[in-house]
Image (cartoon, rainbow, N blue to C red):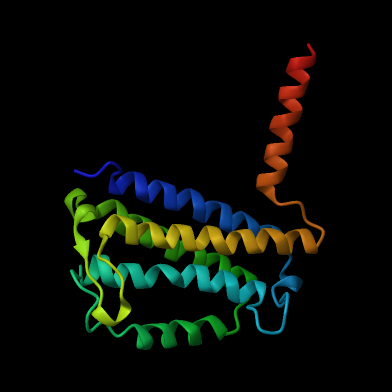
Length: 182
């Protein structure tokens, strides 16, 4: 038994994806082509990157349920995903991709047997990396999304948008301050 179940992990991922979708909704479509520097992804590419990022974990942990990463064709999977990121998409298509892929992955997480989370996955010797639990590896898509979502929140600030999580925190602080004053 693990200290954190697959259903809770799925719920946590859904929360992260919900916040990403809200940011995607708040950024106007005319800014989806914005990139901070020439070598970075655009807003739209970043959102598609997040939508497709869960496919690696799904392939490894749900479809193949690998015990080792030895022989896994990571480069082929990455090349396909990178090409998909560059495909032109309208904002509505990106939002639908985020919703569909997010729920698909969350449902797969929730359906994963509890004991699978404690299984160990080893890596090729050349990677010089110790084995990891499947649970630790399945936290990866959520952590990866939060990393890029933070970038998108900075971009929102650059575009003059106060991120929704900041607005919510400000509203809580105002209520707290008003209660304390009474």
